[in-house]
Image (cartoon, rainbow, N blue to C red; front, side):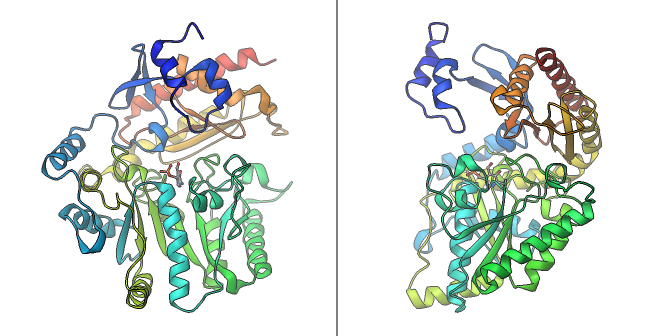
Length: 455
Ligand code: PLP
C-alpha cells in the first residue's frame, strides 16, 4: 500500500464503496475525481477523462452547468430547507410537479417526490398495495419484474432487481417479487428463433406465470424501457406491445422505470415513448436534476389518487413521506433542469447526434473481442466474447470487461463494465458529434490494448 497517496489511504480506511470488491479495493484504492467541466472530469493527479457513462447514467447536462449551480445557490440562500408534511409546502414543489406532469408519458394527476431511484420504486410497491387495499383487491400483492432488471437496492426495490449480487446473502428477494424473462435476444433466443418468435415466447411465458400465480394475486409489472445495469438490453421490436397486451388482459398495473431512460436518453423525452409503452405510472430520478442534487419521483394517476383520498379519509393520514420529500433545493435544481431541456430542445439535440453514436457503437461489433454491439439514442453497450460465432463468454475470472474499462481510463475515457463482460456507454446528453468520435476512438484503442493481452 506504500504507493498509494495519503488521500487514497484515508479513503480505504473510512469509506465503504458500493459495487466494489471491498477486499481487492484495499490493494488498489480509489480513483479520486476532483473536478468536472462539460463532459470531462479530472482526477486528483490532474488527468483528464471523458465521462462516458455520465457518472452513473445521470449527469445529463455535464459537469458545470451554470444555470443549475445558480438555481441551487439561489434556493440555498432563500430557503435551504422546509418540508411538505402535514400540509406545509414551498413554491418549488408545485413548480416542479407541474413541469413534470406536463411531459410524462401518461396522464398523471399528482407527483410523489423522494430522493433516489430506489426510493421511487419502493414507493411504487407501497402505492400499488395501498391502492389495491383501498379498492378491496386485497389479494393483489405480487409484482412481476424481469431477470437482469435493475430497480434499486432498498429492500423492496432490490427484490424487484433481477441480479444475483443484489440478492445473494442479503436474504432477498422478498416473496412478493417474481421475475420473468429478460428480452435479450442475442443471449436468450433459441437456435433459429426469429425476434418475433422470441418476443411471442416471452409474452406467452409471462401469461403462463400470471396464470400459475393466479391473476387475482398479481398487482403490477415493472420494467425499464431499456435495461441499464443489467446490460443495456434493448428489447426487440414489438416486445412491449406483446407484454402490454398480456398485462391489459389481466388488469395488471404497468410501472415504467424511467430512471435511466427518462429525459431524452433514448431520443424521446421518455423511453416509454420510444418503445410504445403505455404505463400507469413512471419512476424518474437521475437526469431529473442532471444528478446535481438527489431527487426522484413517482407519477400518480387519477384512479390511484382517488384511492389515496379514500384511504386518507379512513385512516386519517397518508402515512408515508421522507424528510427530504420535495426538498426545496433539489426541486429548484430539477425545475431548472426541465426548463433547460425544454428551452435547449434536448430531445432534438439527442436525435441529431444519436445517428453518429449508434453508428460508432455498431462499428465496435467489427472488433475481434466484441460479440454484440447495441445502441439507442445516447445509450449503448458492447458485449465481449471469447468467440464470436458460438458467443462463448470469457471466463468471468479473467475480468475482460474490467480490463477494457481500465484500458479506456488509460486513454482518458471513463466507461463501466457490467456483468457478463458488457461495457456500457452513456455520455452526458450534451455531447457533440466530435465528442462522440473522441469517445469511440478511445474505446477502440482500449479494445486493441486488451486484445493484445488475450491469447
Ligand atoms: N432504476 C434504474 C433503472 C436504475 O438504473 C437505478 C440506478 O442505477 C435505480 C432504479 C436506482 O436508483 P438509485 O441508485 O438512485 O437508488
